[in-house]
Image 1: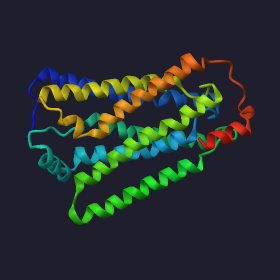
Image 2: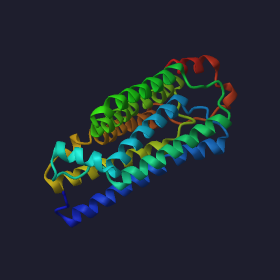
Image 3: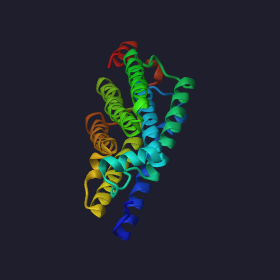
Image 4: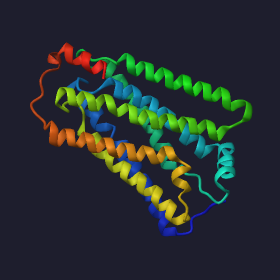
Length: 265
């Protein structure tokens, strides 16, 4: 079985992993706190939250399966070599578990706080429905051949697709409103830091093992970091450069036409 060659690199790997966990986990709270203080979710795109729940749920299934399931691990070693380390760490499982819970809680806030004329779009509902239907087909295909690694890879692919998709409604909403009011920038700054440290963790493992299988053997984690970093930078530019903060208008003035535009992305 694979083991670490350098104790300092192993320590650095664990430190970066848990720093990423803390940063990514805390990143959920600024939005939750902002919603609570405003007693409003106007400005937070509901499609973003719904898509995010699908994304984190699929990522949790992938991480938990890779980390705990011996059958998946055996198939991983058979494919990439017995000397390769499993590319999922305890902090990955902890993060995705926490993310599912906090995203579900944000959906609860959406259901009880003032939301103006906003609602989940039919496009988002269709995307989520197609995503889980696709997963159901993958489960049906995997069972006869016991292709467990391929099956969990399907969940990994789904979370990558949802990661890309989930950011688009919020970015478009910010652009159309010419404002980021109601969308917490603290969430984005912490998410960016988490993405950078998560990517750094993968680099450290690759250096220690003198192998880059860690990246393409867990392409979902690789793309998660890169996509998150890209969109975080976009949101930062929107917040600080394109649409600097101005006095917030009351939520009832969130006009119907704007809401309809958002619904159609």
